[in-house]
Length: 162
Figure 1 (tube, rainbow, N blue to C red):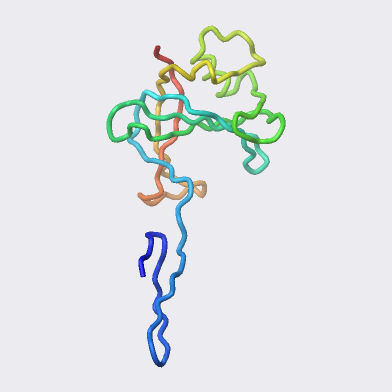
Figure 2: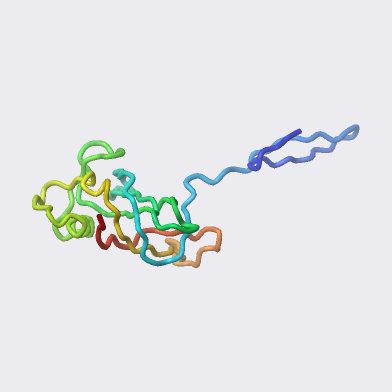
C-alpha cells in the first residue's frame, strides 16, 4: 500500500491477522516562508480585504525579486483599515485614515499621488518596491515560536525603484 506524506499507516491487530489502515494526520495550509531579516526588492502581486475578529484588514502580497534562496517567495504586508466597503474579497474596496500606515506607505511609494480618497495598487504593479522584512518569532500569546513555526512579514515598504 503506497501512502502519501500526509497519511499515517496504523496497524490494527486482531486474533487472526494484522490489518493496515490509513489514518489522515493533517496537512499544513497557508505555509508562510521564513527569510532572513533585511531589505529586499519586491514585486507587487495582489491585495485582499478581510475581517479578523471584526477588525477590517488589508493584506498586500509581494514576491521577493532579490536573487538568492529567498527568490520568488511570497511575503505579506498587513494593514488595519477604517472600513471595508462591500464584502471582503480579493481587490475589495476599503477606506483608510490619513494618518494610517497604509496611506503613508502608499504615498511614499507614489510621489505623484494627490487624491486622499483613492488608493490604487495598480500604480506599483510594474515597479520594484524596496521593503524591510522582519521575522515573527513570538506568537500572539507572547511565547517564543518553535523554529519550524517562525515566518517573515514585511515590516515596512520603503521606496520604489524604476
